[in-house]
Amino acid sequence: MAKAAEGEIVLMKGNEAIAHAAIRCGCDGYFGYPITPQSEVLETLAAEKPWETTGMVVLQAESEVASINMVYGAGAAGKRAFTSSSSPGVALMQEGIAYMAGAEVPGLIVNVQRGGPGLGTIQPSQSDYFQATRGGGNGDYNVIVLAPASVQEMADFVDLAFDLAFKYRNPTMILSDGIIGQMMEKVVLPPFKPRRTEAEIKETCPWATWGKPKTRQPNIITSLDIDPNSMEQRNLHLQKKYQTIREQEVRYEELFCDDAEYLIVAFGSASRIALKVIELCRAEGIKVGLLRPITLWPFPSKRVEELSTRMKGILSFEINAGQMIEDIRLAVNGKTKVAHYGRMGGIVPTPEEVVEALKQNIINQTN
Image 1 (cartoon, helix red, strand yellow):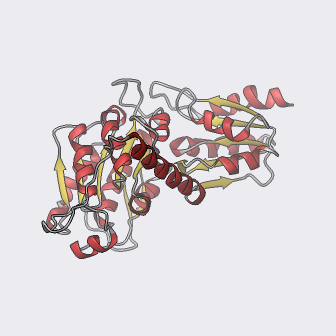
Image 2: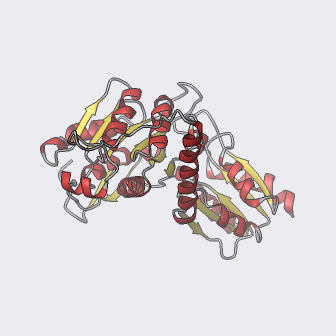
């Protein structure tokens, strides 16, 4: 596409927006491997050739395992680096993500979800919720997870994800899906910001590893610690950091909740369907509201709990077998009825299906 002027409205896919936003937000490097439905991220970067304009490195690695370890290496040097993939590809990255979390290395992983388990289908799904929010690798760790619901948020969340990754020295994930990645919408791309200079990286990332003089001890970036007492202290430090993130970085959107008697909790593409569900319900006089988690981790548990005290019931609407419902139930703690509705195998529910599920599983059982 032609270069968009600052503030100009352009039409593009969600995957393309990720790529353009990365170039504009001062990203140092991208390392990825093609997989449907996210290949446009790599394809767009290859077409834009940012190495000629900003110096950003773009490399198709030999595998997803290689990709995440390249992000690990770049992040350890204080660079803004990211990778993108889809569900089974992100599964292959889990060891590297756990290593990054253990070594406190910042980096961004974009997951454009498709149906599973296993190779599954190339159709959209939201079934990687547990993989993202529970950490698919080993050990006690968390990844900051942002869930965009539009092409605009695909663009906006790139810089936000990098800011959070470096603020907390933690891997972040943009958990999208095949609907948001492939759909085309109007978007205003972020303004250009220059890549940080080597001096700026050294000043802002004193923990980063560099080629240092022999008279000085180099920074060692590793998640390995043989001594169990030392390893426990490392884990306690991580848990303290995660608690700070829970207290300071919860993000959500709340719509039509002021007079609502029933609540739908939905994220990403499901939240777009939920808006039509609410329209249909309110046309029948059924007062339904929407809570859309923007951070899936940390999850907006406190707000869900607050809303639950005045709701007759909550429907967890997610395009999977029911994963986010576990976080909703933990937050509600029995204060109101909670049910799930979703489809699997890459099937996207219609608003009418969800209305019927809300009536059968919540409304008819609470009135």
